[in-house]
Every structure is written in C-alpha cells, then in structure tokens.
Amino acid sequence: MNRILKRIFDVMIAGSALILLAPIIALVAVMIYLRMGRPVLFRQMRPGYKGVPFVFLKFRTMADMYDGSGALLSDEVRLTNYGKMLRRLSLDELPQLWNVLKGEMSLVGPRPLLMRYLERYTPEQARRQEVRPGITGWAQVNGRNALTWEEKFEKDVWYVDHMSAWLDARILVKTIWRVLCRQGINQTGVATAEEFMGSQLECANGWMGNRESGLETAPKQR
Image 1 (cartoon, rainbow, N blue to C red):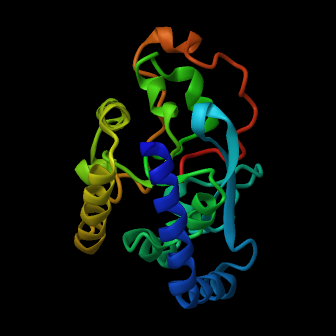
Image 2 (cartoon, rainbow, N blue to C red):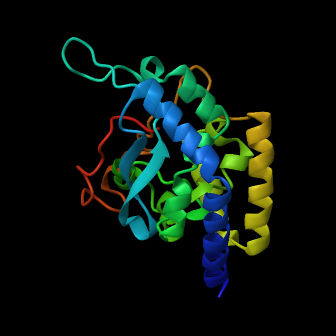
C-alpha cells in the first residue's frame, strides 16, 4: 500500500510541477537551443526498477567538442558556463518530471546511474534497484557528490529499508534547502562525478553480470 500511495503522490506532484514550471522549462529549453543548438535534451539509457532500462532525460549542459582523433573531450572542457548554472540550480533535472509521470522514476529514490554499473555492484549495493530511481534521494540530501560511491550506496540501501511517506517529504524539503545553499553539487576538483569502478574485484561477476552491457550511450556520468 505504501508503494501505491507513493505512486499517487508522484503523479500528483510531477503533473502539477510540469504545469506550474512550464514557463521555466520552456525558457531553459530556448536558451540551450540558442547557446548550444540541438539537441536540447540529453537522453541516455539508465537502469530503473529491478534494473529494467529506460530513457533518462536531462537538459543538455555540455557542448559537443572533439579532439583531433574524433574522441569527445573531457567533461570539464565540454561543460558550458550556462550548463554550470543549470547544474547549480538543479534546473537540468526538470525533464525528469516526465520520467516520473511515466512511472519510470519517482520523485524520491536512489539516483539512476549508468547501465554498466549494474555488473559492478556488490549484492548489497544492488539492492538500490529494488525501488524506482528518484530525482532526489537520501544520498543527495546527505552529501550528494561530496560522498564516496560506497557512502552513496549505503544511504541508497538505507532508504530502500526505511522508505515511507514521511521520509520522502523530509527528503523533498531538504532537497530544496540543499539547492538553495548549492551544497554538494560536484566532487572536489572534477566537473562531474568520477566513474564508479566497483568496490571490490568480486563485483565483476555481480548482480546483473554482462546482460545489460552495451546499452550505455555516453562516456561519463552526467
């Protein structure tokens, strides 16, 4: 029943937010188009509930820039000033309200990471896939990218074990405060989160094996 109420809450809030924030969403989209051109949205396959892939949406924050050999330049180089502003204000996350409305995500839950990470999780870390991924979560309001990967996953699993309407409300309120204070947006010294390579060697034969390999469409976490 708790999950049914959570879904009803998600639909009500996400639907209302899409209507109320439509002018802001439109303005951000126009500015991205004028500054970086198409595409306006960043789309990528991410693992959802039970690891089932879905198309994850964000506003684009990086320019397409390549070196002489045709390889993408680093995130630090491609992240535009406008993109940095969107990330500081978390405006790049607004398209995920559509993911929530479709039932692919929840307002609150572990963040959807890269498909290739599934085979690197320990069995305990893989439990983060037992709920729908969220726009924000327990890890995001308790350190976000300032945490190590292991600390993030510990908090994700803690959320899975303690999920409730009261906890979700608390996380949403704390998220607003964190955004206003601009805390934990990036790891120190890097533009985006460093790649998770696994907590131990045994992760190479982890929860999903190699079943989902090849679905990741971009080189780094955004």
